[in-house]
Image 1 (cartoon, rainbow, N blue to C red):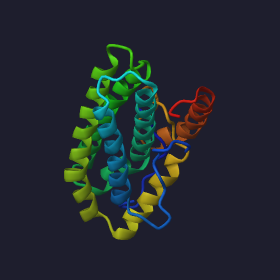
Image 2 (cartoon, rainbow, N blue to C red):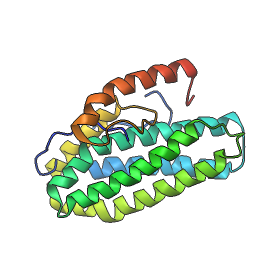
Image 3 (spheres, rainbow, N blue to C red):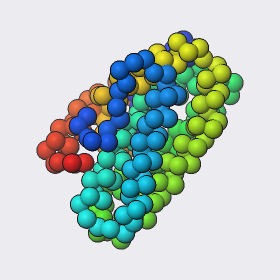
Length: 208
């Protein structure tokens, strides 16, 4: 999976119409990530209402879903999961589980990226991705986030939220399954991969 720059934090540490937005006021990481989950769910609902369609709008929305999910996942891998390892009992096990789900979804996104809506595999692959992400989001929002809120101060959560928002501005927009999956190794490669992805997106009109 794509990962960025994790330092060992203190104990807690765009062009698309549907791109993840950055808040003007300080926002804690749980609010930031939950808002992004809701944005993606909105795109999922739109796509489900178009089930079986093969037009350009389906392609555009699917590309926006992948873009949003990749940026979100990279940010979590660079900052959220290293923090989980630091501050939660059993944090290593929790982080590894979350990363394994990211890896599974990234492989599905890579497969989806190679398909067009006319392909017989497109809709089954998209439904697979939707199921994987909804499962992952439920686990995070009902399990991980309450634990993180209990373990971190509000100041720490807001600092982490600002870091998440900043890194999403330079994060890759396409799946890179071979990239490092967490922390500083991911942080080192993400800006370069993100720049290349954005150039490719601009030249191809992807997501527009």
